Image 1 (tube, rainbow, N blue to C red):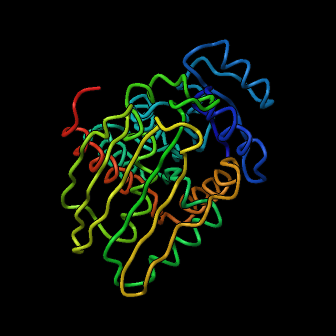
Image 2: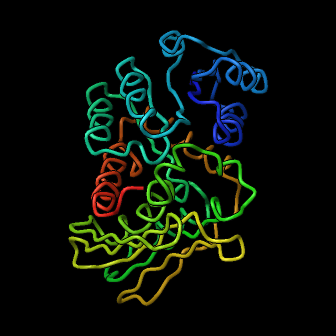
Length: 294
């Protein structure tokens, strides 16, 4: 399948680009970015062509992978779907329900495949765990805490990310937490959000339509020594914890490419499709409205 890559930042350079370039069933036909110099540099590293005209790249592609801030991604995803391109998007797809709904409607209108890269679902260890727990009934309580040092002193290429600075951990790692809790505990009917009092720390309490409840602590502001990711669910079957993610994101992204190829071939909606991504955006938006302006 012919892919175009939209975006030239660290995530595109370290994850999307290498995975696409190495995939046996992908021809990476070009890169489009908002600035010509990094676009040309990344295209050269990936041994493909830089595009200044997005529509020209869409015309040359069967699918696009998007590594751009969510509020840039959403309208471009609609544009790509309307051009007949399958979509491999990043989370969150957007930061407003209207924009996320627009992506889902464009996918359905155009009849294209869509997979959103909720990383944990495409890593072998965590993806297998999620599928195993989804087959078990009776989960009643959940917890998912993402404690990141991106703004807390880590040597990270994402520290300078303008959209992460603006939106914080709620929008960057909140989708990871929800991608664990929603498939296991069901849709959310009520969310309560409170600031953590330190940096961008946020606490969420969720009530699910199943009667289950869950909590999240989300932050990019802990020091490196305090960082960690933990998640668990509890119910009639006991207690089970999310295993460690044990592979590089590019390896997981290659499986997301596989999933999109399957969705495009079969027409079947993937669990991590546009409607699931819309649901995640809706929950996070409800939480955001309860928090003080950043």
